[in-house]
Image 1 (cartoon, rainbow, N blue to C red):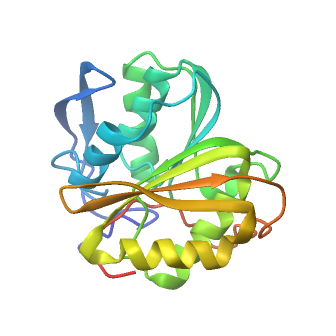
Image 2 (image 1 turned 180 degrees about the vertical axis):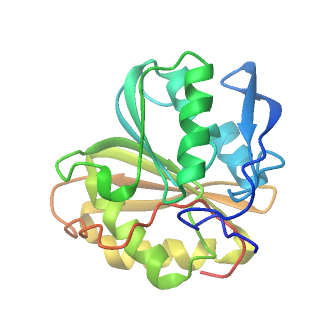
Length: 224
């Protein structure tokens, strides 16, 4: 039985392997396993986000929306040890791998959680995500309208989306849905990926959706 990375409990064997890569300017060993997003390497979109998003603030409350095995959460935790990072996913194996990987780097400032486990009053200064495409428009849009309205005023989100898989149409949709309380711009375009910057400029805009659908998985390959 094949698993999707957004399967809550993968049926494939939990056969772990170690990848060595550079995160936050240092060499780190990270565990991965089948049944999660991109288990064999650091995904190209995630690499673009990590290499080209602005440096995170020194402190604050951050969200890795769709953490997978944890390269984004680990980077945020290492770069900003005084921040609290929420690493959110629907895949239990991914959450376990992420928790294992951040702990292996000595990071005690990360909380791994399913979306429904994040308290409703938590607000975020920063969101980084390689957001899900394969889950389909309905779930993707619900996910974005659940988490982006939880930015504080002045908070920023950075979303990496492949250009030929709908980054420009997603940016247009975000402008329409979020309204005047947010600014949505294309920060940069690298190797076929766009990084979209979403800045909350004032109160107002949509109210966060209740997390009735556990959506928090990372990106893949279908048009938005």
